Image (cartoon, rainbow, N blue to C red; front, side, top):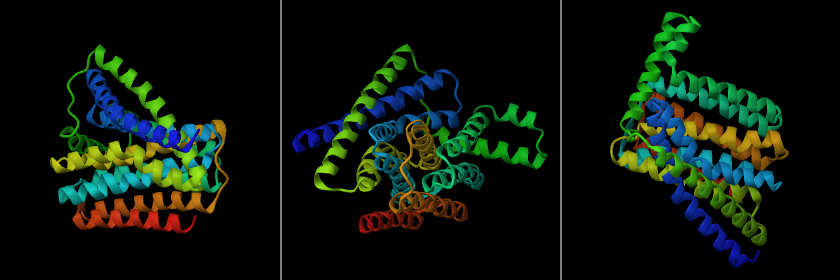
Length: 333
């Protein structure tokens, strides 16, 4: 593949993938509404659909034995998501009010996933063990969101725990209710979603191949191709959506979207293909990106909890932390 063709493939693949992913998200939301999903469950579906470009790009890279690119796409996307969805969203909106219980509940899941990811990338645990931890947490979280009343009744937890969890889930759904209110879908929406998924998959594969070829030609390290270039491009749908919601005063939904998106990235884009194909050997650059993802998650959650939300100053701190990540990664590769 020539340089010109690689550049054309990357640009066209990126434009088609990002444009079509918006169709995929909206149609899946409608189908979910038709099936009676809760707002929190709809949010999870929307996050998974919006993650399709980065997940596909990561799987494609790992399948072509470019594990460093694949890991970079997922982990770099997670760092970018925090800066774009929450940092930029707070700066644009001026203020994103958040319930502390939502920060703790979603943050606990996000941190378990992040630590499992870091340990897997660092080689302290295998990808299989990391995936088992992540899937157990995510499946439990999704089940709790979908049927928290009946599940908590069966668990016979202390009353204070039950009340706290019920309240946290209701508060999370109230944050998402304003942002996710799709009309009920039809059979046409299901067909459109399936068609959009195929287009996004094909376009994302082309985008990853074009970027990897260009990176090889110009001698750009794989971690930079994945962690900065592909990570930022594939995360743009989430970023645009977050800024749109923030400008309309609905930025609270960005927290759940960002945390869920990052967790799904780790599970579907990194650990599942790593179990099937293999994970890159531990490296300083890989550990840097993974550590920054976990560290920025901790910083964001602390700012959100202490401030009962994120203001312009908090948003600027998160954005500066991302810019620091870019500088350090470029300087060390």
